[in-house]
Image (tube, rainbow, N blue to C red):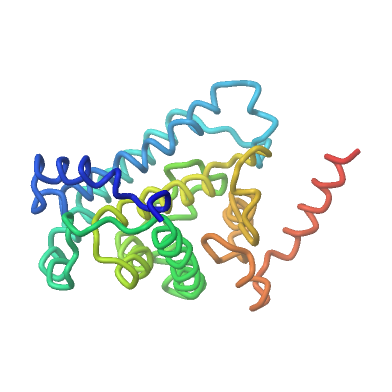
Length: 267
């Protein structure tokens, strides 16, 4: 059906590709898109810190974000992105081209794009759960993952505040889904934008009742992951709650806290 097609976008997308060039967009364009999505998603949560009305939605009420912590985090994150992520994209560029990733591939239908996004979330969440859980053991935690836990009360851009090895290990799970289901750059960028919103939102430190993610079954969101940062254990999945429930790693007091919050809201 024409209404479920992205054909109407194709002429504009191909003009964009022709203007900047496929070679540039596959590597450097993807890095730029990452930066725009990542920091763009952070801006609303950053602004919320300065608006008193939103204070009641902050998960850890006794903790406040300050300029010193935010600036320190931003500098380290940008250094990691420029010195680790960008070189990784450049190094793996030949492999990406070898598997057929193209900026000029026909755009997918809307149903197939949604299938790719949902499947990528499920795959990434499964990979992240086990990799993240492993990073909480022994030397993996002491020398690598502990860096990410410098912030017990996270805020948006702490999502990519991590040891370089962790960036590589956990970042690998992000690209599995789109490379299984797709070979077009448009789909990869859509997935990248959605995935970055998810990770920034779950590190935001805010639980907004109007968030559309509250409607998604098994979605953990900010309360789920914020709890992990606060107590340093349990709630290992990146997106959904069911893996922690199945494997018995849900935070011991997390659901009790959620139930109490629901009761207080209803009173």
